[in-house]
Length: 192
Image (cartoon, rainbow, N blue to C red; front, top):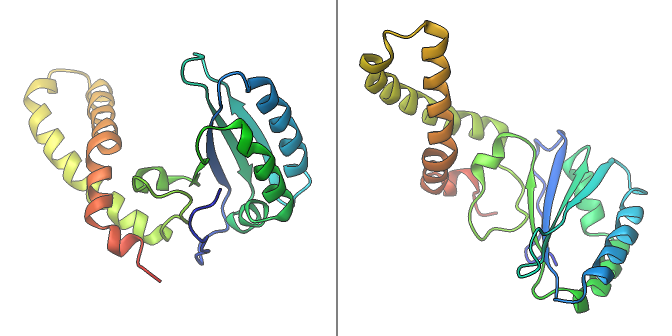
């Protein structure tokens, strides 16, 4: 269920993906599969729907299903998520799952800008994401290239750049951007 109200920014015209996870009660997998096919069919009827798929659990000890739902824009996704049709499907889901669903939306760069324990929040405006990303890339690239130059200088330039950019992207994804997002969270996600 949606635990927070959904807000729409002014920069929500790009394709959006909702990642929804459900932890299914043991023995209820078949019921969940039937439920999924039903709700997926109804979601397709909504404006802007671009497709839905699911990742099924690989182990039965932790039966978490991940639903990947795509819409052409945030407004259309929001209409689906708040619709009476979906609300009825979610009521039918409750006996099949162990805990409330979690929803996260992604449109691009904001995968770097997700805050922990914040389900379904509109991404920050693109200009804010660009500024924080630029800051992260600038600082990380300056440090990494300075440290790696003595080690990689004998390699061909393309191999040098391949290694350097690969390390920068990994550092940004797993270390730098989560910390910058926390540092700038009040600017990225101001309270209404």
